[in-house]
Length: 472
Image (cartoon, rainbow, N blue to C red; front, side, top):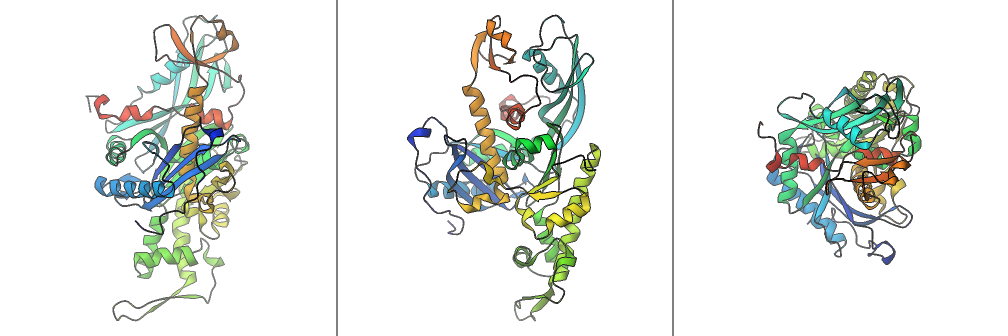
């Protein structure tokens, strides 16, 4: 076990006041690192970090598991380090992030005509509308991961956030459909399973990162979350309270390191160290007469590399990544100043010097760094406040959304008078004639928590081999 990977002990023991709260573990399987964080909410709604471990990632490229055996060993190493930080932990289930250039998205439209236009709209009708979108044609090698409703319409009334309780003849909605490669998804679940863990749920990494660094004001103002990871850059765009766009850009910090390695003729480890210590995203901000001395290798003469040349290489690749961001914003008509919240940069690659200035120059939008510390209780390990852990913290928050929803549900007959309170009804899992309900907050724009609640919690069931569609 690498001593520099293991985190110091001293995590809070299981407190009696939060005994009823579960310990939820987020597992971020990245291209350069695998991180595991165990957390639990305290009485103030903040995350109490109970365990933290990480390991170098092997077998993963551009967010995709290519070598399962190497990935298994890296996952096991990260989990061992997490358990070593707190021997009282017992970890069996994890929430896992999914990304990679195989992730794609498309926009669709769906409508249904109601059988009875005098009754109020119920959740089962919304579920039917959503389920119909799973019939959308995608290539045979792909799988629909999630169908996310955007705005609804009821007859001639547009831009309805929550149509429950309305009356009308026809319900329609715009949908954001996310797809991924079947084999890529299966490889992730296999690696986690063979590492001795159960995948509780899969979640798109850009949505997890957004949950960690966004607040409700960001959701209302409109923001673009740009998570610059090792192998990919993940994008999630929110506007007017809804998810407008997701994208996975197949370039990240690892590409910058390889550019430096090839452009300056150094070793990969030297390129990574130069990037971290002396790198800048703006060549004009680099010191003109500063040089980096690279030690000689096997008798060869040492090298002196200009800091300005290093910055020029970094700027070229970061500009390319940000141009992809601008392109995706333009696809949904948000490439101007419509996003009042601007661009939120997070992930390990966001820590490059002068990246905010370059982002504002390329995109024309205001930019800032997004940190996940807003959701953490005081006294946590300072390292966890770094942007590189946004995805892992977001996965824990996702797990708590699922847990809290399950705790707030009631089982009642369809004919119950409780339906007069405009409830949100989910399709029943139990005996016929019952449904799971929770009272709606009304037909207002969704809060951040309500938006995250809309991300389905049962995605992993779609990828289990025993239930796979026999046509593929």
